Image 1 (cartoon, helix red, strand yellow):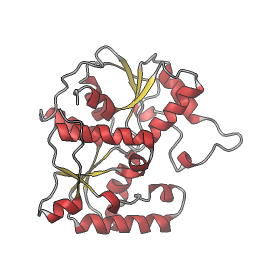
Image 2 (cartoon, helix red, strand yellow):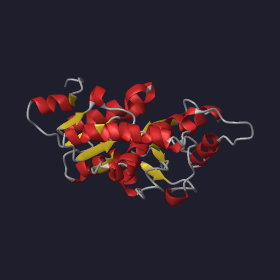
Image 3 (tube, one colour):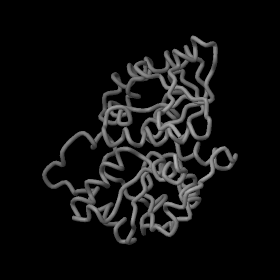
Length: 263
């Protein structure tokens, strides 16, 4: 079987007079960060395996403006948002799926007031749809019996009350799913939210990611599962701070599912 990934841009779909089933919004991290690119590729492998007719914007995709808004620059956010909305509406986009909860929250909840009305899903929700519809089946038992704990991203969990989808698809791997003491609505932030991802801790700041990783490590996991590229980075750094590299892996849910599908 070829390992080549099939990805088509919206420009190509338009040229062929076709509309995609979904638009995959890759996001800034998934496009540029080397670690997050692996999550992007894992999700594309899943889409290819399930024969999902999807498109990406490619070079036409820009930052959602989430970071600018959280940092207090509303003007820059609206500039970014309006530019994206103009492109999305020109292509008559209806359904958007993204691996980034920050992009998910922004496009779902903040773009409508600016003229961007779309059905927006997190990739764990879409993977669950594929599994429920039998378009995807987990043939490999790579993670059977493995101890996996899931860290709830703030913009997926508390902001949008999406707790079940990631857990449901992790359970489909036959892994042993463990809950941290602080989980779902009481989950602790990884420390990257509110544009904190892009600044160093100030004097007196608590290393939130180290504290959150401690929550995860208390479950004695083999794998800490994440559903956000920023959470993935912060938890990976937390593993290093606890000197547990090589003992505990940090993996996105998409990577776990892709590895359970023998893709």
